[in-house]
Image 1 (tube, helix red, strand yellow):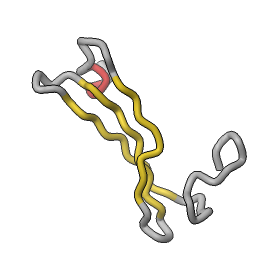
Image 2 (cartoon, helix red, strand yellow):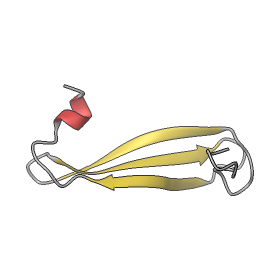
Image 3 (cartoon, rainbow, N blue to C red):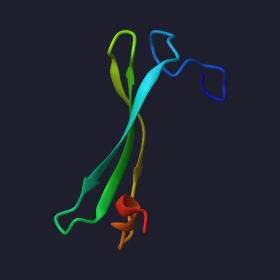
Image 4 (cartoon, rainbow, N blue to C red):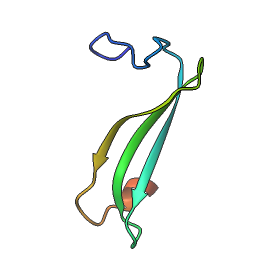
Length: 65
C-alpha cells in the first residue's frame, strides 16, 4: 500500500520485486531514472515513477560517488 492507502499493484497484492533503471546519453550521463515493480503473484510489470535528469554531470547517480 502506498501513503494514500491505495494498493501499488493492480491485482491488490502487496508483494513485489523492485528494480531501478537508468537511461543514459551518448556520453554516458544519466538522462532518466525509472522505478519498476514486478508482482510476485501474477508477474505483472510496470513503471511506477520516473525522473528526468536535466543537469550534468550526472553519472554519479549510478556510482553513488
